[in-house]
Image (cartoon, rainbow, N blue to C red):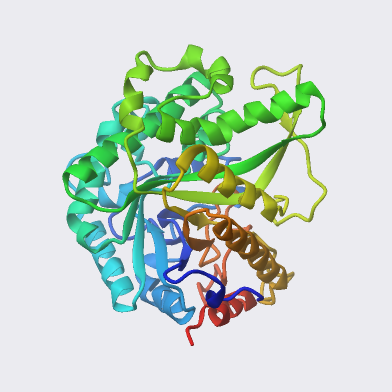
Amino acid sequence: MQNTRAGFPDGFIFGAATAAYQIEGMAKGGAGSSHWDTFAATPGNVVRAEDGQIACDHYTRWAEDLDLMARGNFDAYRFSVSWQRVMPEGRGAPNPEGLDFYDRLVDGMLARGLQPHATLYHWDLPSALADLGGWTNRDVAGWFADYAAIVADRLGDRLTSVATINEPWCVAWLSHFEGHHAPGLRDIRAAARAMHHVLLAHARGIEVLRDMGQPNLGIVLNFEYAEPASDSPADRRAAAVQDAIYNRWFIEALTAGRYPALALEGLEPHMPAGWQDDMAAISAPIDWLGVNYYTRSIRAASPDSPWPATRAVPGPLPRTQMDWEIYPEGMYRILKRLREEHTGDLPLLVTENGMALDAGPDDTDLNDDRRIAFIDAHLDVVRRAIAEGVPLRGFFYWSLLDNFEWAFGYEKRFGLVHVDFDTLKRSPKASYHALAAALARS
């Protein structure tokens, strides 16, 4: 790997990230049912009908996994807390066993010199709340705030940072309009409500955490650099609409208290009444912004389709196992755009960046040179953005472990560490060793 720690500013944070449902194993520790459990139990939703009941068994193997983080010379671990593990019914009394687990996990990070960066919601909504409408129900904002307070009361004194929501576009649009994630809806009314309520939940969470004195609060957004498939006016508009829905909807709400007009053209008729009154709370200050970036989106007009009337067009560059085009330049452009148009001097963290890569025909091939090249190329643009004034404070690779990759089951492997899902044996890949060497302190 060409990039090393020495090429970055003093104090720049290097970490790896995971999410609770993808690694912990929800069959243990008194966790309740989540909408991902029921989504996975529905035929056709998840590859091979796999689920997160065992996953990587991080619930019992957490110490081994934190040792891998420490030996990898990482500074920080970005993890998520499972709402269903902390509050099995989503409301009411918390689960002591669940809170005890996160106590041990956070203390284990600190004992190994790892900064704990917590995300409160990474997509596992308790089923009892899904029964009440989940993200389509305005009350979800209050339920989330209550949950946030319970987590902060137990763990907050030891957390380096707290993010409210991970990737609200996935929580709302991908899950309620495109139907690819739980709850698997394809309904524009549900999507419009979820697109607003997820930000309202963020706002209520920030309010309660501020009142508790919790420091260093943020949110994690995913971005895809949107480009037109051609220079035609129709394709340029298609790219602009995609950008408005995917990128601008969330960042403009958070930083300017508004939604983009191109997205409201389709969503406003389906928005909850009085949504405008929530925008001041949604745009309350945060302390940092997390940026997740994987690929770009090339869009063409689809005039025979209902709004948003766009379709994706494959790009010409090499692709990952997820069939995502590898385009590091897009991350540079997103970071620059955030600094210049939206966030100014607000500190930024790259909270996810990574690639899925086949492990080889016998699942024992740990030589992932393409992943090493992928990380190096993205660290190149991180350094370029920093040199040009972007206040970027850290980089987290996704993911530490091969894991349950949502609707793709255990087929797509993002990990620096190979997991044998039969034996649960962990085997560091070449990329793990390359990063460990790059991050070593002299």
